[in-house]
Amino acid sequence: MTKARKARLEEARSWLAENSFSDDAHIVKAYRTRFQVDRRCAMAELCLLHVLSPEKQKAYEAELDRKKAKEAAKANAQALIDDSDSDETFAYIAGYTSWDIPYGVTWDELENHPESPEDIAPFAE
Image (cartoon, rainbow, N blue to C red):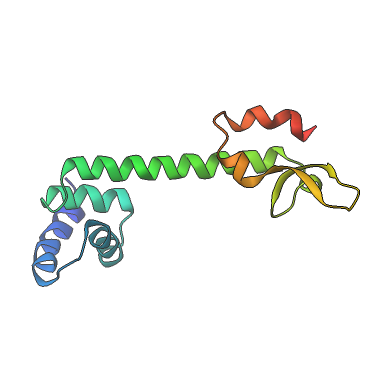
């Protein structure tokens, strides 16, 4: 354990005694703000201080990983699609009706698609 972490944990003990939080999410955010650490570090240190259980830490980390994967998949999907064939509603505009109404694949449909973003590559051609 580094000197900085030891000092932070000592200060955190007194800080936690002086403050109360409504739930675990608030305490993680407050800890991050107070001690200028990232989310994973805050959760690990709160575990060391016996404020968070290891199970909750694992659940939070799994949720963070899931969110990052979802954001990365959306970014990859957007990069594969030509911007001229998309807008704020449609990830891919396949065409227009006789009344100039677009149709195609929406961003919501793309996000909820069970397969990987690479599977939409044929749309980008």
